[in-house]
Length: 182
Length: 139
Image (cartoon, rainbow over all chains, first blue to last red):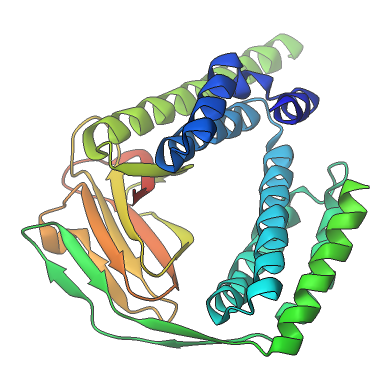
């Protein structure tokens, strides 16, 4: 929690992670209350994002998103290697879309801001591997339940990612993460 | 001349700040009226200032096994913003116009897919406005 406070102060979003929020996170962590934890963190993220947008420092928000993605991929990669779970491999493979969006639609807007081009180049290194992941989409007619205001989306995406490619992606993530946090 | 530029700049900044504040208020209204405690926001406001027949498009990934709620607002009346969910091939998976401009709708996802959410103003209700989309997922 101290690290969260220190980092948020360094990037100028300490108000989003005030004592009340930190206490709520700590309390829900201790109680194992994942739903409330998610709720508190989502609200804090929204506050931080609003603040960065208003104060004209959107590029910091984009770097926060990349940082969060990198950490999620780091943990997913560790789990996937350990469990050899096809489900985790598929989830990692699906991140091809997210990676492309981060590079082409998010970071590309802020390349002149400090540190953004460097991070974008790191992500390009990861993208070379993700380009080999095949995602096939198949349309299926959705089913709508008007009474419950619910639509079931039945279309399917399938990911083709070999064990070897998955391993290469995880290793590359570790390499890039190492460069960022050093 | 310098004075004029300064006044114009001030008015421009004040205008942008006012629009930003209005969008924030709409997002809060939208959240309060369309999200229940069992839905957690993804933490983002998808917003765009729209005029007449303009459309805004937001891309997102829906993960398999999750139920999402999309809420759409502009102004402080429900149902003024139309939203459509389209797949990567351009097929319309959902259109709120088919559901009497429902301000929110839930989506149960079988398999992880990337979708586009297209929003536009209801021409009969609002000539311009801050289009705000909120996405939440069921706990």
